[in-house]
Image (cartoon, rainbow, N blue to C red):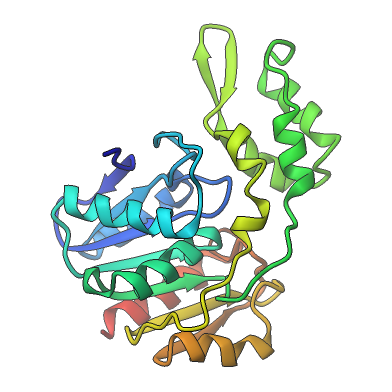
Length: 258
């Protein structure tokens, strides 16, 4: 059995697992993790399969991603965890809460709803899959090549955090792009109609993001009747990076009242 890679920040305290979004990695959350560790949490920055330093696999769906987290909890002897999941990580978390409720104390879902989303990453995936590391010798080269597909420089900066030196003079991607380029539809899948969790949970959205809409409240409440909802002002989908101070305080205040 393969176990997900993690960076654990904090020596002891309540175990808080953070699940990153599609094409991200656990280290995207390191700044917040260090702050939570100071408040008494032991934070597990997990890399989901085919991302970061975790194992690669041709199997990639939310049921499997949730099972990966269960396997991680068993390996690390974790019980009644707190979990925060952003975007794809939020979907993994929702499946985890509904299918394996015994592992969870409470959870926070960042900027994703339990509904089905239309595929919308194809240009990004095309760009990443066309990066030719026989020709690309520097991070600047990679940025220039990706710019033909991804116009926004902030998005490219986020994606290119996946670059690393495979060997001297040879760049590569930590992402298993050969698998991930074909999972666009699976990433958008919603929950089954009968999926349900009564855990305390918070759905927190970015004010400028369209991932959670006002008319998504009924479906959130259908699956998660004890859900609370909150909005982070002046932030889009990357709400934790775009308004980090507000996001951190809002999530911390919610966690600490439980």
